[in-house]
Image (cartoon, rainbow, N blue to C red; front, top):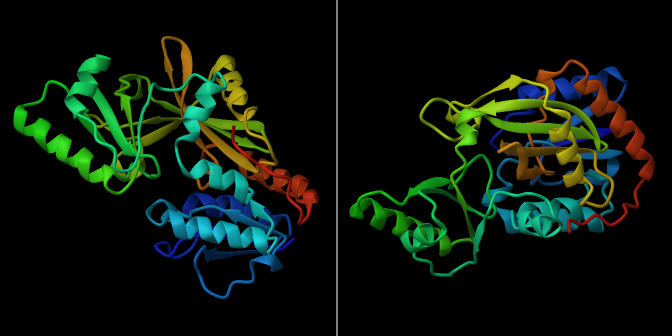
Length: 301
């Protein structure tokens, strides 16, 4: 197989973690190239597998990225994950659809583009002392911030202006601040071809709530309870179609796993956390490549 890893212009190549997965494929005898998704003149259809890995600017240019996905479909590119699945996963409103299917999700208020909402009234009505606010299309905690009910009048005015400005550009989701992210940590469970591979427990630095490494977050190699793995499997069961990889992010609240994100586009797969993960990734790709150029439809509920 000829394989391409899809990246973005802000990266000089693949990430250190992705290089581990790349090396596993090379060791299996498969040449791997890396290109930014918007690089001109790439013959994507010449590859046996095109794998989205670090397209970390798609949320800043969602319309362009969606157009690129459509082009990949027209050109019958063998894209992983399939374009329909990726398209459905771009906007976090998929969480609402999953909640309608019975998946426990963090309670969420969904605000549409240009909608108006009094933030202080919303928090008061919900009984939320603090809430996390973020765009419905986002990545790496971009545009994510915390609103507090007990802040000063001037701070409340700044928060309202911030929300209003966001709603002029995009839809917004508002969730109660989940303290367990700080106290217990956030699970990331990684699956290849829908089979559980490994997990990490992500933690935020003291005084922060963001678990991403660029904000001082870190991870620990942990094994979740069987009930947590089963809960993540139930999430994936709601998504149809072939799936090379998935990362299910969530937190345990009162003993129940609550979904925070289902990452199907470009998640860190934490190859570095488990010695067998790169081989499992490579094996899944070899197995799934039997689907050929005609991908079954793949949609989130």
